[in-house]
Length: 88
Ligand SMILES: [Zn+2]
Image 1 (tube, protein in one colour):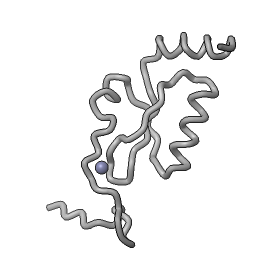
Image 2 (cartoon, rainbow, N blue to C red):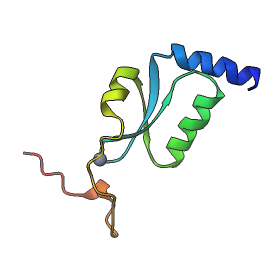
Image 3 (cartoon, rainbow, N blue to C red):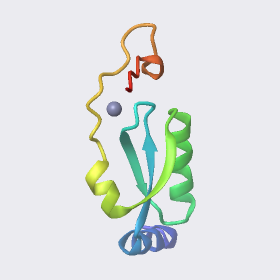
Image 4 (cartoon, rainbow, N blue to C red):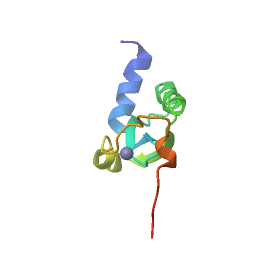
């Protein structure tokens, strides 16, 4: 492991926040621990490329919300962005 990798592992243990990727339906489906180095930047840029919205959240929040998407993947021509949101 490189010095850089060791430094990264140390930061992983100390981190209190993570960047999360939020789908258009509002669910958190991706997360990377915020270590403030290039590993974090690379992961976040990949989330953005996947069309996710990025938020910075406490680790505790991430533990409670990650991978809780219960929505179906968009199947046809209609992106779920436009699915009827009938709020009263
Ligand atoms: Zn969802």
